[in-house]
Length: 419
Ligand code: PMP
Image 1 (cartoon, rainbow, N blue to C red):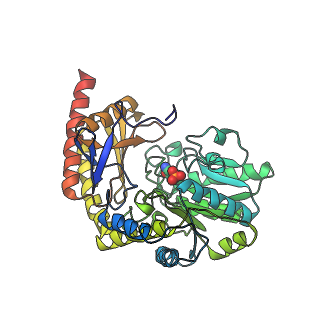
Image 2: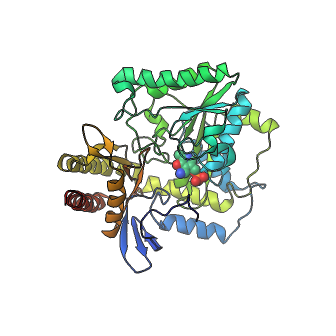
Image 3: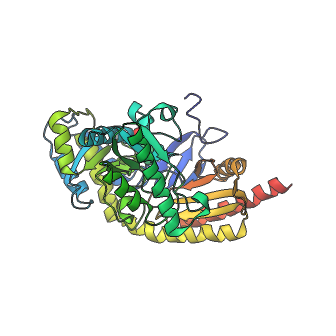
């Protein structure tokens, strides 16, 4: 896999089977999956498997022919958006979706400059690697990308809070715009994950995103919401994470949970943008939106709806968050708990006052959890934020297992550290 594709755990985990929120390794050991968002409606969801099998037994072909599945699916998908976002193009990966979004934004605005956070990951193609400020060397050399500090209320810019903090971060977006202009580069847009998931599921100061997007639009740029991780109802109350804010994107990209593990991703945008772009520019994706992929995509939407999984994200999500906060009161190591529906970030610190990141402890903890049969992972600038993002059918009984195991692991870790 190479140096830059490390496995999650100190000892590799060899998985062979999955069902719902459970996974089994090659030795028959069972794990509770509290990490994976790709199997959105559950590992091997029977509805999805059946839809895939049925369509694969009937017809599968590339996307140059008319097929009812793609029309029906896109009508259903665009129905989840606000008015004005009613046209879509399908791809196979989130990276391709972001690549297409960048092309479209640059084409429609005539600008080149893209603004992202200073710890961004949006995929792996060349243009998308260029905006991967947290992970990709390309981002440090290009002139087409500028970044602003991650909008984090736990580690706030200049110690500010509330409205002043939101304004301070928005001012840093304005600074990026001004720097582009000083270098003779026109702004094409701002591209962010509305959950700031790879940044550590941040507690975003209210009003920040609205202010930042207004500044970018004033400079002639567009707002691209990367919903590759955040979308498809994970945040509970809203289908798309941008809907928590008072601002509608011009372009939305999506992927990961969209096909429950089958490679399905896409872009939804203002129709006039897609029309202007596709009049002049060619975009063809052989496997993006095949009859099988769109049958799978439809089954994912059916499962979300019929199993009331967004409602479950609200109720089980609140139960988990409460349990995590209880653990925070007991374990000094937990500096901050953040939650949004069925998505949780738990920031570990060596000292609550100084907030020194507990990096080694975080790594040890996720390995301990794995040994105890619960899969979680970590993220963030300091790699010291637990990332908990289970499949959506996760129930309170599963939350109890996670909370109990985490409590045990934290106690063991504290004993090890003080021994
Ligand atoms: N955007 C975000 C926010 C992501 O987290 C990822 C994947 N981790 C991508 C885009 C890229 O998606 P893919 O791996 O499907 O290309």
